[in-house]
Structures are given as structure tokens and as C-alpha cells.
Image (cartoon, rainbow, N blue to C red; front, side):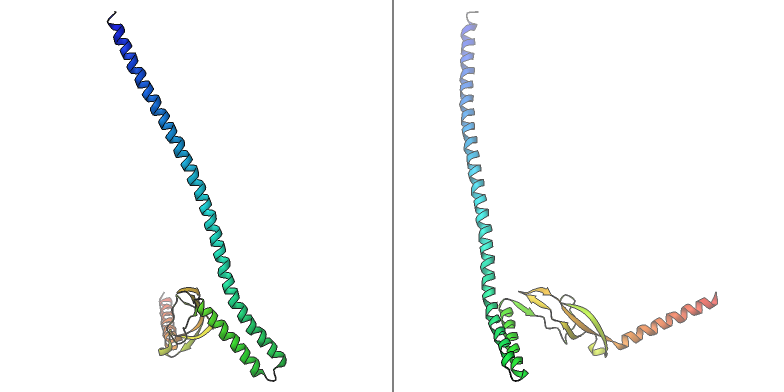
Length: 197
């Protein structure tokens, strides 16, 4: 039994040493966890600040973009005011028409500079991606499928469709006649089969 006491006390010392090293490792892990948590909180606060700053910058950029557009529109408003002033003093309507033409030209140039382009579709084959058919007119075969008239202008903005053109399209007279003949032939067949029964 005397031999076992030193073994037990040696074993106890080993366990105590392991316990101490485990306590130290646990304390170090807790310290790291606290450090990581602090870093997480700081990163989160920095990200929230970044997000608020980006949102504010976006809002400022939108407002500044509007200011630039409004400044250009004010110039057009000046031309419009001049045209209205001319209507009071104009001796003939041609002067008023010239003022309106100047306004229209200035406005069209402004929109083009901003990236807006009118769709040119009259006399061209119908493009259903850029035009909406509102009406049809019977035409000779060579004009069938062509846009005959633009009822409302369509626009592209920076290469993308903003609003489709609304158009009148030519349809073939002979195509309608052929359809009618086919329909008459079908009616005649139905009548003949009805009589046989």
C-alpha cells in the first residue's frame, strides 16, 4: 500500500497539471471568443455605417442628377416663355409657329442628349418588339406587313425600349380575298355534307 501512495500522488499531480493546462486553454479560448465577438460587433457597426453612407450617397446622386436635368429643362422653359410672349405681340401666326418649332427642336435635342431616341418605323416592316398595332389598312401585296402610319411615337432610352410605337399596318387585300374564298369553299362543303345526311 505504501507503494501505491506515490503512484496515486503522481497521478493526482498529472491530473492537476492537465486540469491547469485545460483551464489555461479554456481561458485563452474565452479571451479569443471575446476578441472575435468584439471584432464582429465592430465589423457590424462599420457595415451599418457603410450602408447608411452608401444610401445617403445614392440619394445625393439622384438629387444631383435631377438638378442637372431640371437645369436643362429650365432653359427650355425660357424658350417656351419667349414663345408665349410672342403670341401676345405676334402679328401673324407664323411667328408663333416659329417659336413653337424652336421649343420643339430644343426639347428634342435635350431628350436626345439624355439618351432618348424616337423609333423610326414608318415604311419599314413591323417589329413587334418595338411597335404595337392599333389599326390595319388594306394595301397592295408589296406594302403588306409594312408600317403605314405612326399613331403615337415610340421611344428607346439608352438602347432599351421605353415605350412602343403605336402604328397602322398594311395588310394584303388579296390575302383577305383568299381567306374569304377558302371560307366560302368550307361553307359550300358543309352545306353539301349537310344535304347528304
